Image (cartoon, rainbow, N blue to C red):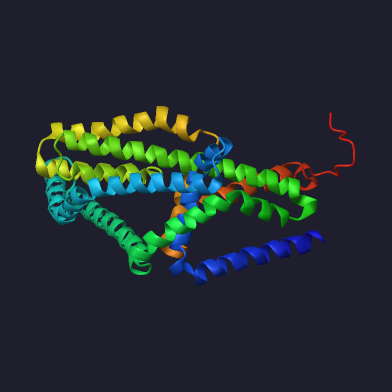
Length: 360
């Protein structure tokens, strides 16, 4: 098979996969979620299997324990979270009004030194930017709700996802072996190497970043609750779990908590305390959590992750957001592979590789 035929084959395969995802987008959520759960828990099942536990029993034990812990957490937190979330949604308009009044007061104080037209233009820009940001934020939440709840019935999601995850956990090794047997034999070594790199990147980022987000969510929520901030629990959880998208979660949490502190307390000391909570959280994340749990060689730049998440959400909604990081990892690894070959090719070197290098 020629290089052109290889390229055509893989192009058709990629286009077919994209068409399938677009065609069945409405029913894919429980299957993708089940695959993500299985991928996350597979190392634990492998550990039990190495200790002599049958894989079916190990999958049942690990998935059952994970489900019990998740259910207990939801039962304990959900009522309080519901109250705080409703309070936050009803309290955002007063927060925006308070921030608008504060900005107006600051600009009025600057009017002595700055032209009034410049101040008016700055105030309009700030108001437009705040309105646009909040509109985008709630549109994103609404899209996630619509994609995740209205299209796929919640009861069906809760039933199908564990079933898919259990079967994948039980048959994971056999599925990998079967897929490996389908690989083209002439390129099997290279494909295995690249798939191994992709798995390493995904394991480092998804599992590590999920752990970082959980720790940050608990840290922010408890800290904001301890300082007495209204709706601190839900804001902290939003900031922590939103940190899966680099810088977005902490930015949303900081803006919300600072606005709530301004309206609730009305003094700079409490606003500074709230800001300090996020500064300390970012220091802990940057100096300890991310280097230890994620690592600095995963090859997924934060800007690339943000672009992938936004592009996935724009193309396929909530399902696209779930698939964004794996796709970004695949594209990143394959791009480095292509770049490596390009840098050693005749196109880059500008000479025939079979000819000796006569340069001094």
